[in-house]
Length: 426
Image (tube, rainbow, N blue to C red; front, side, top):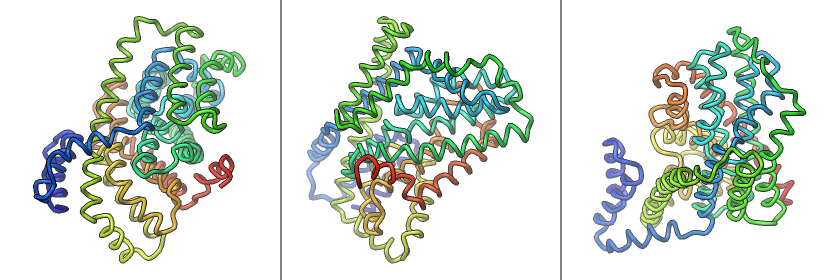
C-alpha cells in the first residue's frame, strides 16, 4: 500500500492535479491496493478529519482577517509603523516588516497580509524610488510573519494534527516571529544603505502620538485575542469568535470604513478560502490514517535513527526535507501529511513538540516565497503588477535571511520555549 500511495501521489502532483484532489485520489489508490479495506472508509475518515472543534477557529480567523482588511485597520497600522521606524533611510521597507508583524497578530494569514499591506506599501515604496521587484520581495517575505505571529492558521493545523496545545504553540510563535522580523529589518536596512534607496522615506510621516491614537482600536484587537487566550478567559477557538466581533466593532462603529453592504462579499471570500483549506484537511486525514495503518511512520523513525545519531543532525535533515517539500506542496497539506509522521520521531530525539512545531511552520513558510508554488510570491507580484521572473533575483537575499533565522530558531529552543515557560510555568 505504501508504494501505491507514494507513486500515485507523485504522479498526481507532477500532473498538476489540485493538492486536495491529488491526496484524495492517492488515498483511494492505496485502499484499492490494500484490497481488504472498504471504500466507505473514504467518506468516514474525511468527515472525521474535519469533525474537530479547534478547526472552527480557521474560518473565523479568516473572516476576522477579511473584515480587518476592509475595515481600515491595515491603513492605520501602516501609519503607526511608519511613525516608529519610517524616519531612517530604508524606513518604508522597515515599515512594511513591522506592519506585517502587527497585522499578523490580528489576521493569522500570510496571503491576507500580502494583499492588505501590499496594496498600500508596494505603491508607496515604488513612489519613493524602490524598484518594484525589490518592493514586492520585501512584502512577500514580510508577509511570512502572518503564519508565525499568533494567531496562526498553520499553527492551528499543526496542533490539531499532532495533538499539541494550540495555546502553547501561539505563545511559542512570538519569539520566532520577532527573530524573523529583526532579521528582515536588518537586511532591508543593509540593502537600502548599500544601494542608496529610501533616503526620503520619512516624508508624510505622522508623529507617533497621533498615529498611536488613531491605531489604538486596531491594536486592541490582538490584545483581546491574545490576552483572552493567555489569561484563560477563552480558548484559541473561542478567541477566533472574539476576533470577528472585535473586527466588526472596529470596522463598523469606530473607523466606519466597513459598510453593511460589504459583508456579503467578505463572507463569500471567507467561504471560498475556508472550503479550500477544509477539503485539504479532509483528504489529508484519510491519507494520514492509511499511512499510520501501513506502519510507515515506524519505518521512517527507524531509518532516521539509523541515519542520524544526534539531534543536531536530525533537525538539519528535517529542515532540508521540509525546505524542498515547501517549494512544491501547499503549507497546509504539508503540515497535515508530514507533521503526524515527523513529530513522534522528533520527540524520540528529545525535541519538544511545541518547539518542533515552530521549526516545521517557519520552514514551510519559506515555501510561500519560493517558486514554483510560493503563494506569497504570486500575491505580491499581482499587487506590484510585475511578472514572477523579475522578483526572483531580488528574492534570493530574503530567502537566505529567513533561512538564517530558521537555523537560530531550530538550534536555540529557548527562542520558542521561554515564552511558553513564562506563561504556562513549564
